[in-house]
Every structure is written in C-alpha cells, then in structure tokens.
Amino acid sequence: MCSSDLEKPPNAPRARGVGFIARMLAGSGHAGGKAARRPRAGFLACCSNALACWHSKKQASIEASSFGSELMAMEHGAEYARGLRYKLRMMGIPADFPTFIYAGSKPAIASSSAPEPALKKKSSSIACSFAREGCAADEWRIAYINTNDNPSDLMTKCLAPGEKRDKFVGMLVRYVSSVVTKNVVHWKETIAQYWG
Image (cartoon, rainbow, N blue to C red; front, side, top):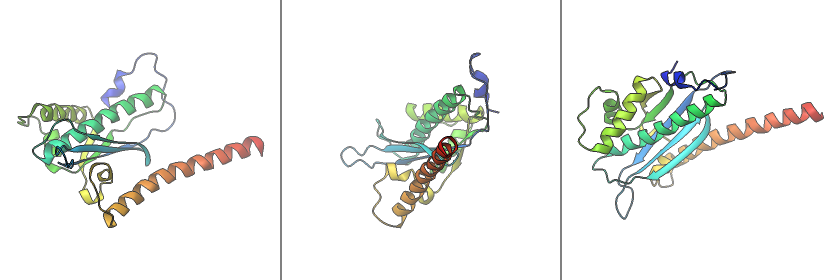
C-alpha cells in the first residue's frame, strides 16, 4: 500500500471495487525545436491498459544533454500520476498499486533512485529529488524502456513515416479502440437490459 493513501481526508469515500494498475510512458526529444533547440517532454498515462491522458510540452530551459530532458519528462509524468491517483481515490476507486513509470534514459533512472546524486543544475536536482521522493514512498516505480518500444516518442520527436512510427500509432489506436469498444459494449448491454 502506498504511503500517499494515508493522506486521505476524513470525509473521503471508502474504496470500493477492484483497483487499477497505472502506467506512465515518459520521453523527451532532446533539442528537437528548430529555432531555439529546446527539448520537448511528453508522456502517456494509461490506467489498466486504457489511455487516460497524453501530454506534450516544450520545456522552458535548454538542456545540454538528454539526461536533463528525460528527468524533466519523468517529473511532469510523476506529477500527473500523483494527481490522477488522488482524484480517483477521492471518487472511491482504490489505488493500492504503485504507478509504473517507464523512461528511456538509464542515467536518469539511476540518479532518481540513488540517495545523493551530485547534480549542478537546479531544475534537474529538483526533478531528481521529486522522483526519488515518490520512489521512496512507493507511489511509483521507475524502469527503463528502449526508445524503439516507447510510444511517447510520438509526442516528443518528429518521426518520419516508416515502421517505427506505424508501430507507435498502432499501439495508440489499440489503446483507444479498446476503451471505445468496452464503452460501446457496456452501453449496448445497458440499453438491452432496460429496453430489451
């Protein structure tokens, strides 16, 4: 059980039903902007294999390496995951499992779990501390995903038409179509039950 579950207000509804497993795929496009070479961070948030949110944002600072870009992408994704878990718990949906965050930078993952990384840039240090705090509280667990398997690259990099782009688009279409299909089947069953 996550320690953030202990922070519920006394008037929060009691958790009912089965919980969910949330996954976050974070990525960044280092120096992808043509004019100022600013990186772009993005993430995909999935709740029980259903795409809940996608986000892409141009970062305010220029990073010297992809390490800082990935840290900022992980921070944006982790902030969203924390808010999503809180909202669902306040609606009575249990959030007993940690969020699994997948990122594409092994050094960023290693520094987010190390006790005292020596980071000189303040924004990177804050992002690393935030990620480390969530790992220590078991709110999320951070793991590596290869860039060839990370569909969040659709939001962060300019991918040329080809096999990699088609693979990622196919993954997203499967996520969206599974949600739409489940909703259509649910509504058909509900209509048949009441009007059949």
